[in-house]
Length: 393
Image 1 (cartoon, rainbow, N blue to C red):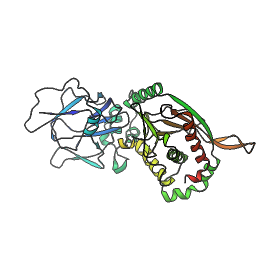
Image 2: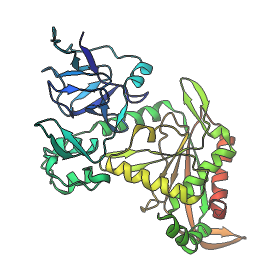
Image 3: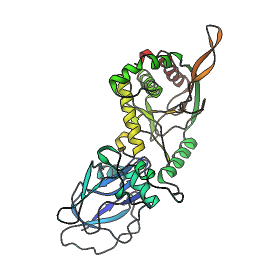
Image 4: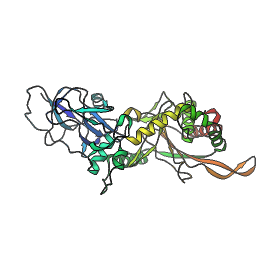
């Protein structure tokens, strides 16, 4: 019997995605492990691999590029040798279980050049990131003629944008719709409360300016205030395990590692990659990981494993004129730390008012996981670490 090609579930919360196009042609011979099509979830775009061998059959009812598809939806078939189709694609299919779907798909991230079928020797073309492919489809751009600036010459979204001028708005993307849905759900179903604190960042800024250039030179990466904050959050998580927990299926689940998410702004939304074990190693290690994640996020090259995990995240608007703000928690995480710019402000020190560089912090907390007192201890420890930055280096 024909093997159904279905839309997989790329995350526990995923119910639909954006179909970004087939990577193979109707009638082409497919081997298990080869990328079949590109699917954009609420977190990232991924090339989806075949899990069986066969001849690809793409029915006329198959979704078009840019179409919204449901998890479990049948979009095509793989046929055995000499097998024919006795029926067309059904209009809909009941979604499979979350456990089953996660196990039926794997990630595909081909580097360098790939070979398309056609001719005895094949045709080489530069690979293109799923995000760049989607943007090219939205703008009606033939990306095959573009030069790639990504790793190993891969075409990334920036390559598409700098070579085109959009004629009209591409509309609402799956990412934008998902952000709207997830923030609305989080804000309406998660009992948020907020704790605020002000950090005397004078020592932090001086340390970064006076001593870190040597670290940057040896590590080969620029160390930012964001790296200090990520590390302070992670170290505070280690000292207060109650804060290193998430809310899933009406249950508090404690996490083993001190991972911290980082909100990264994109052209059409935002994404939250996870900085792993930011409490371990040294500051340069955190900076390298953060830099790599941001670069991958903005070039559309993040894999799903980089987007899952963590009990807390950081949203840092320190490069703007924003003094203070409150952020919406990203479920199933339990906290979100919002940080405004560092600026000279009146500050009471030793009973006297002085001009000091300070940062204002606001911790959004899920009351189902943390009560006020432990959340205050968690935030207080972050403040203490940032005011004694030598402990973070």
